[in-house]
Amino acid sequence: MLVSATRTSENADGIKRLHRTRQEKNMRTGYKLITLTEEPETLIDLRIGITSPGTPYACVWIYGDGFSNGSGTATGGNYDLRGHAVYNAFKSAGWKIDPYISGHHMIRDAILAVGQKLTNDPLYLVEVHP
Image (cartoon, rainbow, N blue to C red; front, top):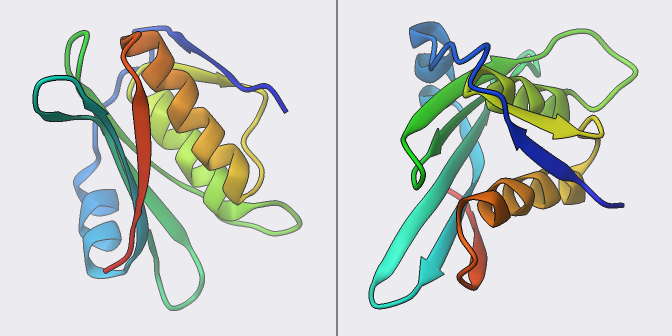
């Protein structure tokens, strides 16, 4: 599925302290999008934490054409909570992801879509585990 990203610069709320604390204490997985031109450079750093009740918290740092960051969470059921938390984190950082993120591979596709808006250099996505 083709995922697109658009920089909106509206709704750029940044990272909420509560989201960052919960994500940091319950880190499960993360992604780094890097480019290797002269030296390795991180373009996107996304981290996902999941608390013991199952609530995901996502924090994203976006470097490149200006710096932005954001955080998101999701509650409820019958949909992909991690994807929704990541979607909200990008939205909070001022990026619109289309379509809605659902599933592990769409999280990767969303990161790559934002990265392709930041640079034309080759991109490398690394999955990080604590």
